[in-house]
Amino acid sequence: MEDVGKNHRVQNPSDVMRKAEEYCALHGLQFTPVRRKVLEILLGSSQVLGAYDILKHLDHAGFKSQPPVAYRALEFLVKHGFVHKVVHLNAFVACDHPDEEHAPMFMICNECDLVVEVDSNPLPRSFASTTKNSGFHVEEAVIEMKGLCTACAGMVVS
Amino acid sequence: MEDVGKNHRVQNPSDVMRKAEEYCALHGLQFTPVRRKVLEILLGSSQVLGAYDILKHLDHAGFKSQPPVAYRALEFLVKHGFVHKVVHLNAFVACDHPDEEHAPMFMICNECDLVVEVDSNPLPRSFASTTKNSGFHVEEAVIEMKGLCTACAGMVVS
DNA sequence: AATTAATTGTTATAACATTACATGTTGACG
DNA sequence: CGTCAACATGTAATGTTATAACAATTAATT
Ligand SMILES: [Zn+2]
Ligand SMILES: [Zn+2]
Ligand SMILES: [Zn+2]
Ligand SMILES: [Zn+2]
Image (cartoon, rainbow over all chains, first blue to last red; front, side, top):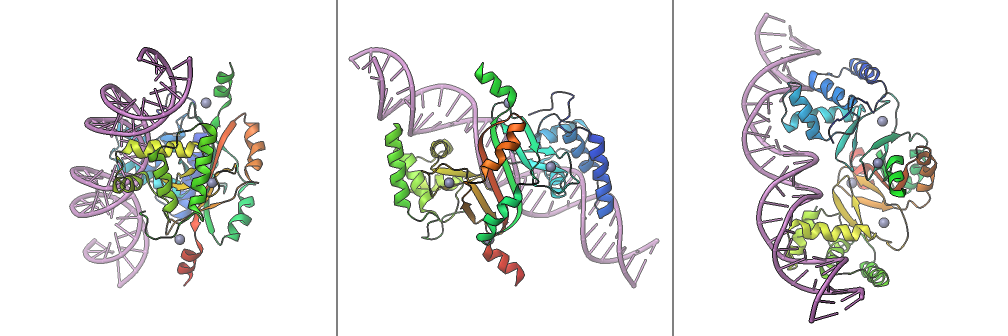
């Protein structure tokens, strides 16, 4: 689950970084060095990263690297929508478009752990009726689909 | 997360139990004592149970109680649709209607951890187009919504 | 009966996450 | 400025969830 290549899963990391800065400034949030660094780590990774992967990166970058350091930064980043947690992998991923309100929706490959965030804008609406009937007040919807990515599906056939 | 009351989250446990027996007989699966017991434990619980909760129950019932015992039984039960895993709680729950093909969909209360399985039959279809575009072959869709149950939502207001 | 496949027993360890408390930093207010 | 409260970080220890690895047993197949 380590970062292996130079490819980023997010197209323009610096762009997202700037959005995060602006958001924090606007809302009086402290975008501290650790928080900034963790977001950079995730933006620079081609794969999702577990908390302990992030700790290793922090360690290499000269930060403190006990578990709470990573978990606290991740909690902040997730809370404010810069990062999502992929609950099936106990791993984290920087969001492409943290400025747009959305329910995170992922496709996860069972073979290679590739994770793709797809747009879910029109979907959560359809849940509303189902949940309203039961009197449940929904705050967050998490949708994760497991299966095979194009590459891995191809391998099986061949 | 222990079983506290006599209420079952599944209406007719013995009914589900029978369905599981029939399914296993029909498909040549071994519905062994541990597997049966774990399903009974989950059917008898009013709440979702973690693997280690189940181990405690197994221990009390005179079964072996090392982690793999529970995890292997749960893997079997999940694989064949008798049990679902609630990934947000790392916990397991017996399914009400294992005979009907469906994607599990849950509502989870952030306050009291109440978990309600709701019917999702019409919904996964709407995902198909989104995922097909990306060439992803979906095998399983997990939908979990977090929020407040009626009871807990009421408390907040008062 | 012999062979193979599936399941279980058992030990150990890996992987993920939180508690608790001390220390430091920041910003508001008098 | 000095004080206080709120927020953030440092650190050690522990708690929780899940799997690896291999031996032993049991069930199905030939
Ligand atoms: Zn996102
Ligand atoms: Zn793949
Ligand atoms: Zn179900
Ligand atoms: Zn509740």
